[in-house]
Each structure stands twice: as C-alpha cells, then as structure tokens.
Length: 179
Image (cartoon, rainbow, N blue to C red; front, top):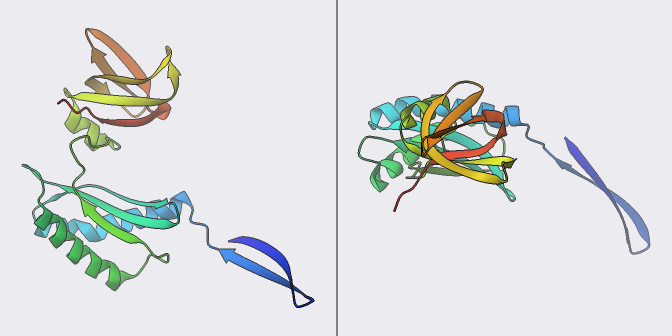
C-alpha cells in the first residue's frame, strides 16, 4: 500500500489526512491477465476464435483489461461484441479484479505486436519491425524477415545481411505493414 500524508489548516485547526492507494505489482497484473485468459478460453472456443493475447495495463488513471482475438480471415465486429459480452458476464461472476477497469475485446490488428513465442513462430518468414531500447550501430529501428528466434534472441535478414538481437534489448517487435 502507498500512503501519502497531507497537513492542512482549516478555520484555525490543523488537519492531517492520509490517502491510501493500492499498488498493483507486475505479478498481480500478470495474474489478472492469466486468470482472464483462463476464463476466455472456453468462450473463444465456443465463438470459434483464437486468443491472441490478454493484458491488464494502467494507462493514465485508468486500468484496461484487453483481450485480443483472431481467426483465419480476421475477426468481425460481431465476433468482438459476442466475446466481449460473454467475457464480461464471466468476469462479473468471478469478480477477482479489485480495481475498476475498462474491458476491451479486439483484433490484434495488421501490425500486431509479437510478444510471445507463439506469435514469433507464426511470423517466421515474414517481414517484421524491431525497435530497440538503445541505439545499435546508430539506429533504434530495424526491419527484415524473421529468420529464427529462441528464448534469448531473434534474427532478421535484410538484403542478405542477418542481424541478431537479444530479446531483452527489444522494446517492441511487430509485423511490418506494407502499403
């Protein structure tokens, strides 16, 4: 718990107030996402969609519980609506998330982020974009064909040259968008 103490004077009297804020750890955020994914699994199967990812994140003052779904040929608005209603009902029944949050169910999009090994596996042989935390050879953005990956690194090829990155040095990896 996080405490902040304030002192103020009102009508000649001294007041102390303590504001208590719950602090959500990464482990708790991951736990909420994992439990939500477990609830979502039978719903996704029923609606013939795949779970791409689930995340529980704070943006500004709001918490967002995001479920990304996919299927061959892409998801429709109706798919998102149906899964959202079913998931919302299950989350209300289980009621394990203490904080208020906004539930979003959507497609991962064309330039989808590749976070997990299963995402990278499906992107082998495709063009991806990588952004590093720190410059490598004077730049932070790279693109190329995903050649291989393992727990520690991934390798892309661009114009016959292969470049290997440690996964811990990558800020984001996503499918490249060609227009």
